[in-house]
Image: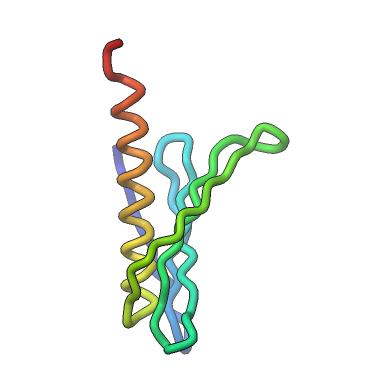
Amino acid sequence: MYLMIHKFKTTTISTVSPLTLGRYRIAACPRLLPGGLFAAQVSIASGHGSASTARVMRFTDEFTTHDAAADYAIAQGIDWVQELARQSVRPN
């Protein structure tokens, strides 16, 4: 499976564009914490219209940069999708 992650630089932070892995759209959603650190969050969506579903996972780790939180979130999202795929192909 081919996977590409794009980063776009802005004046203060960079954002990671959402990526598609199979039928899942994975998007990092880092958020700034009161102390200046960042929390990692990832949104994993699938489907379209009224048949769409989304899951948001929030992680307890704190990161010094927006990029580090985004990279961690994307990696966790990819791991979650890959584990789900492995479970679906296991024999009963």
